[in-house]
Length: 126
Image (cartoon, rainbow, N blue to C red; front, top):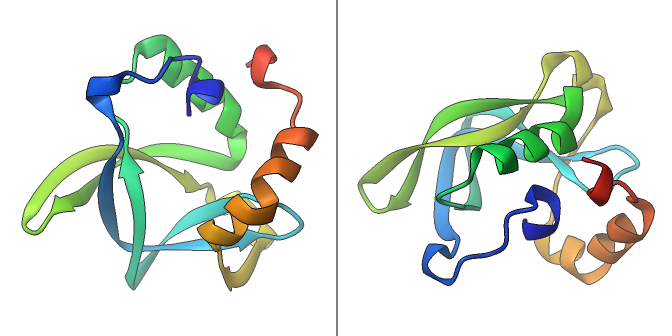
């Protein structure tokens, strides 16, 4: 997150575990990263980063590109505790890029993250 946003991690604002309901996280064909799409009955585990600066949001928006739109959604951070958070959702024009497989975060950490970092040269350009 710090690499992409350009905003250094702040000890007091560690990511908060969260649940996004009625969304599904699928593999993007030929890529190591996922896409979120609205889909009733599914849930996506993730984290919330707080206190994101305006310049960091601008970098994140450029990083995600036209394939994703940033939308405000309701997420659960504790049983019964709902907050509004910005999430990047796949733009409908790119739905043909999706695989029907769930994206696996643990697999990404084991093998996909380093491959993605090696292939992506644009952190300094965004």
